[in-house]
Length: 226
Picture: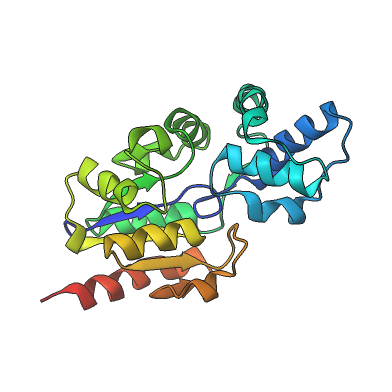
């Protein structure tokens, strides 16, 4: 693991943020006189950024928004979400121990998320997780967001890594698309937020619990050795 970079998605991979994100979406819907969405119905909409969550959420609530109407809702969403960013959000079971194990083995960890960098850092700070990462590369710190490979490649470069000794860990099609386009090995978690089941996204390895992550990383990096 020495010298390797492990890049992580945030929402649905490292942290279970669904309650706070969907709660903010439902706050917007309620303000428009619309019924709230059940958590399980809205969870798959998370992962492509807040605009996508709002667009898909209003569509599911029976009140689709025109593209030009999304920005005011997005602005209101950010203000409210930032104030409630860690009310119920928590790292997934075993996450902290797995990250600490990877660091102890010599890996450098970086967050590669379609969430804005400031919001990502605020969330990680609230959960005492920022200390585990060498950098946080959100949607506003890359030339394009996942599934564009430049997001992942930017995150790897940000921490001085080499694409040939890197791994992407995520939960959804955006992560899979970025990893494949960047030619970086892919680990997906089975418990995240995705409209397409993680197993159907053909990861190199699929894990059901963070306890399995250190061994999974070692297997993939071993396969990358000359």
